Length: 444
Ligand SMILES: Nc1ncnc2c1ncn2[C@@H]1O[C@H](COP(=O)(O)OP(=O)(O)OP(=O)(O)O)[C@@H](O)[C@H]1O
Image 1 (tube, rainbow, N blue to C red):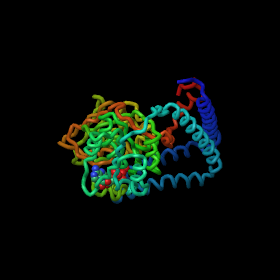
Image 2 (image 1 turned 135 degrees about the vertical axis):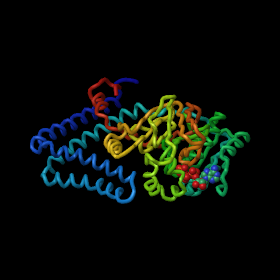
Image 3 (image 1 turned 180 degrees about the horizontal axis):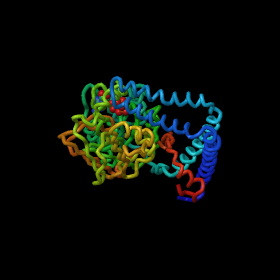
Image 4 (image 1 turned 180 degrees about the vertical axis):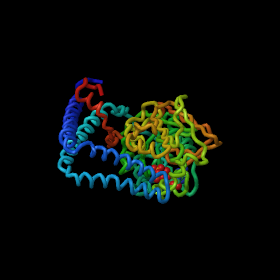
């Protein structure tokens, strides 16, 4: 990595500002608040965080009165803290401290983001020559009808592509359609549809070393987001047909079935299986979580190994095509790169209120979460089949279920001019800030 660039200097100045602001707010806390008010208020703050964490755990893991009591605690604890602080008249001190701390955090975030943008810079695309016979498979139902809304068929044909419109009145074998297209001479395959369909056709393109075009016509479009494509207007993805470049990326398989984003096991996979899920995602999630997180439930427990190493027995296991950004492992956010050559593995095991409170306070540093990378993940259970959500599609797969990462097998054709991925959210890590502020350039 080249040393001392404009980027580095900007990150360093921001990190130094962050350290000054954060230190000033801590000095203020010690000098003014603690000397005058005692440790009591600090203890109230810590107790509030713990109570709110336990309350939130009861909301997701229990039903009936205990769920309501949990909700009441989760709301009442912070409110009580604010009332108490107001009563003790520490408003002004609080505001000064908060302002200094907020400024410090804003500078720290900006410094880390500047450093991360450089570290994660997506590999340069290779200039590509336009295809002679592009075949694009389009699902008219995806994203609530984006194919029609954005006039994708006419726009693709105007650019010389052949369009195969899926007949959604019956289940269509999209991989077979793609294979037939290759036999008929296609030199590029593409999909306007959800990520599950993208993965099936991407695998055929990879098999034949053909470029693959992603058209963001699904509902969530996580794959398109991580490729930096336009998700507001899927027709912009068609620009790749005339002015495109190729990115070499990885593809993953679960039980030999391809996936571009995630294979999830355990609680989440079972929720996705339920017929109510498509109609009301959040309500179904809340209704089913207590049973699925229940230690005594009849479901066979999962065991998992990442590259042969056992992972703590998970209630929820996410295996991802390349690791998610560390700060977002719980939220299923975005992947800074798709060419690292490893699967991301996130195993979650929450066995009661204590672990839940720890999870609420420590996040990904809690013992309830194991984060790994691996080339192969093996999932077993004392059952013939287990539910697995593959890129959001509900499947039952025979055990053991094996996930494998296939490095660099997919060539994605993207428009040369594309928005790029949204900025990576960063976790405030004060040790990294210290290194950026006072260490050697590039030593973050
Ligand atoms: N191979 C297929 N054959 C027939 N119909 C399909 C096929 N794949 C999907 N569908 C139908 O199309 C609908 C839309 O599916 P798709 O996954 O493409 O988009 P989406 O659900 O809007 O996006 P996302 O996957 O991001 O949620 C599905 O609900 C299903 O009814």
